[in-house]
Length: 155
Length: 277
Image (cartoon, rainbow over all chains, first blue to last red):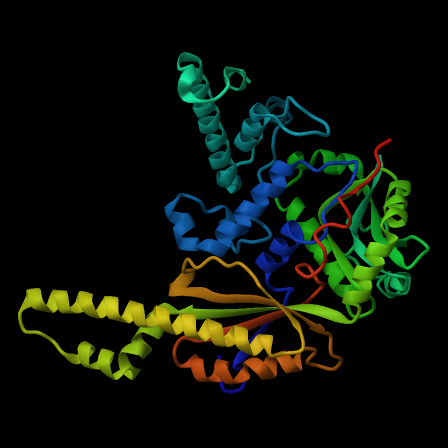
């Protein structure tokens, strides 16, 4: 790079996929239509983009390398493996508009393939949160003096 | 079943701009249908027809489906920027009918028009400063007399040499932190002196590949200038520090022009919701 000729680099917005996606997925006026996109996928993509911005090496250390095969981010592109109808059927028992429950989140994560290791981490995290919630509920039920209403604990 | 995807809002002349883009592919969410400017008042809703079932079952779409649509969303708004005022909407607003979109236009006409008037002729630019840490530390070790003396001194005893090296690391790291802080302040001051709105933007300080990390990030809303360099004043403002700091492992990067993703309102009124049947 000739810094004497062009000390300030003009990065074309068309070439910076990360910049584009961070803006589109995270910024702009929030308008709620009557058809809801499944938020999980958008959040997963946002998480993926943020990881890419964060540190490629650090993400690799964590076992994430989804961008290596992602057609719109990675350089080593592999076409997505076709998914069998039976596998999709098993993985998506809940269909239609609306929030996905934890079970369908986990099923979706399992069928997404190698490019969704972030999704697998998310579902593992959801499981851990559920387990912790159960633990908290048991603690509150056995020890009402812990401070919260037992009605809350039984939710 | 059809649905209508909302890209954003634009001024009353948006339909003229869309006519010029009519032959372009890769802008509409579905290339079978054109992007249209809905509405009759001062504000237009930029929308296109899509297959609602495709969006409802997006978890079964191929990898990259969502990314491609996000890119189309961005591309359309960027193409319109030079021709009309553009107010981006966050990705994913779908409506089952155009009547609901028209309802939004009617209900929030004044607020949207006010926002569009403010953004007319303006564009957002993104300014980032990066530091290559190994290069910056090396440059500090050469240029700072105290650090250079510390660097060149080599104790003969291995243990002392080890401690000396650790001391040098700590001193260099501290010097780099000071340099980053001072230069980030200077960049902020330079931008604040421009006839523009400036906003601090978040960034992740964790180093990326090869030890380079971002140390400054700001958004600048300024008039979109005509000619081959539509941000000539911004480049001119940052030219001197970029030249001076290049040898220290610094680089300054500008991207844009963008529609005003960061400078538009987050919401209009209490919330902007399509009325449900």
